[in-house]
Amino acid sequence: MLKQRLLTAAILVPLVVWGILRLPTEYLALVLALFILQGAWEWTAFMKMTSAAKRGLYIVVVAAGLAGSWFMLRDETSNWMALPVLSLFWWLLAIAFVLQFPKSVSRWSSSVAQVVIGLIVLIPTWLAVVALHESGEQGPMLVMYLLSLIWVADSGAYFSGRAWGKRKLAPAVSPGKSWEGVGGGAVLSLAYAVGAAQVLELPGNQWPLFVVLSLVTVLFSVLGDLTESMFKRHAGIKDSGTLLPGHGGVLDRIDSVTAAAPVFVVGYWLGGFSGTPLV
Image (tube, rainbow, N blue to C red):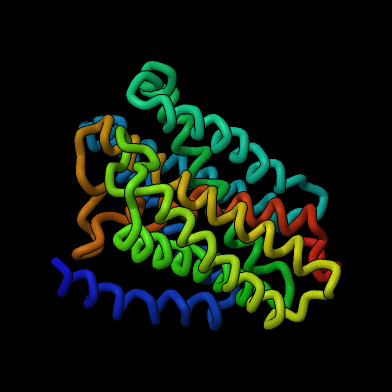
């Protein structure tokens, strides 16, 4: 399993980095859409949907949402930011659902609720990443920063959790995660954010807010991970899929991003960093 994970990462990570830094936004948006549609297919497993026709219909609905989001992004008169903002309301609700699991199941487990939640999770994630990529000359670097920030936080959480983890973060959802792990990830990500602020050449009056935004983004990335774990536990499945050998499915790889991306983009927009509005 470890060998598979390392091999998949060795192939996938360079491709992701190259795509973000080299592809025009239009092509990157298409590639990301394919991953989101695979994620939509995996999401239907959370709903225990077995009919191929129904699962295919859900993918069509998500694809239509992505297409509509793209046209909103290209229309200067549209308020496309409303979608990432809307997703934040879901993530705030998710905090309570995760903490109260399994008692909270009745509040989100209906088919209709999970259909809507899937749309709110998947489409704003795609839109946030694409908008950030197109936000200016530093757009691709900002997307790389967002993803690498999550990777750094995950690494810090893993090693600090193994070394000092005692107090369980959400034992009913993910028994392996600890408060000590979250703390270690937060400390490492703070240091990383300070360094990134210098690399991005943010003015002195902006980088402290940028660091705070990065920390909030990391905390929400943990929530994204826990939320997907909650859905998988309710559905009785270990991995969301088998597309990525050793890593599970697409949702297993982007669960943190689904919460982190909208938070970062909304915060970046509201903060007016570098005086450059998004798109």
